[in-house]
Image 1 (cartoon, rainbow, N blue to C red):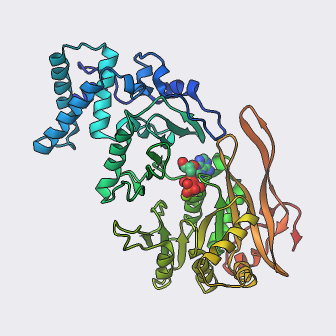
Image 2 (image 1 turned 90 degrees about the vertical axis):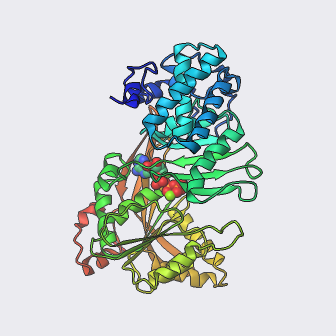
Image 3 (image 1 turned 120 degrees about the vertical axis):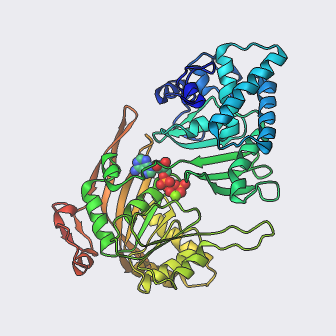
Length: 488
Ligand SMILES: Nc1ncnc2c1ncn2[C@@H]1O[C@H](COP(=O)(O)OP(=O)(O)OP(=O)(O)O)[C@@H](O)[C@H]1O
Ligand SMILES: [Mg+2]
């Protein structure tokens, strides 16, 4: 058995598991749970954290580190290790590194004549290990499968999202430069850097997690790091049905809509599940089609054989070389795509997307930040204006009426769950006004025991796009739309 295994199995001087069992973390996190509604107030630093014991230490790796009597020992061993790694120690040989940490820590403690209690010894060991082999204090959170988002708000507050809800953890960093070191460790392998001259950066961890970092002077509370972790297996349509995010009828309808090449916009607020739903909708695209995806950071995980993934590029340090979403969307038109999927429309690319949808590239999918289907139309209008073409509003709306078939509204509910709250069809124009008709909607009737209560309803309207289903040979029973079948 290797040293690492022995330490993990708690059978050596190191003892105890380096990977905490998840339920214990939950238990420790709960008492510090923030009110589920944002804004979160910045809490006092974690100096008053509960006294360490074998269970508590697992959420307490960084707690009160500013007063950590062992900080100098930790830092001494870390520095020594990093020096060794330049000479002969390979950081990817975890076992050798662990052995080295134990030796160096024991030496340092002996030289200083310090004999920490066992829990403190383990805490120091864990913390050095996470520092050298992982992303410092937040590594323990990144290792926890139930954590979907890690938010570092300055050095003394780390918030996580679990099961859709936010919790303030006891994890802290030593100081701001400690956060900066971790940010640097994330972005430097990607050839990026973050400093005063480029204080914002998007990146990804090797496991695909999405990372954003923003530092002073732009952030007034110190360096801020946001990591969105994705489930190892992306959520599928069946998962969304099981989680109550939509009904089987809605899923069947959306499958038919994608197969019948309708143009669909997924709309929702931040973190509402737009990208996840876009991924699910994309999974309905037949396997023989050529799909080109365009994203800022490639998050979609398509399973089809013929997928081309394009990612935009920020400007380099001299401010040159930027390739935006809009440039990429234009380029896709010359790539003979059967489908164009744009991760998110934020600006002028909306115009290119509408034009593509209207000129033979139907079946395109995208998302946009908006709070309702009506709102997304207004947002798209503004985005088209951002393209700088000075188009009359009437012409823009006309394009939207012809291009967009469906808007699927996604929301993060009060209880942390995500739901499709409306599926609306764009039915055309009346005068200058775009006509929207809800086909399905979620009606919340209450909030009981911390859970949102409500029903999904089909509005009983036969969608205009139904004829398009038939034209594409897509069969969908009319019963999906409810019993009342009003023809519009
Ligand atoms: N239907 C769902 N049920 C439960 N969790 C979900 C659901 N959809 C998405 N999630 C989770 O919610 C988080 C946010 O999802 P996603 O990245 O899709 O949101 P988004 O709206 O694209 O966010 P952003 O605006 O930041 O791009 C992820 O952790 C994801 O796994
Ligand atoms: Mg997204």
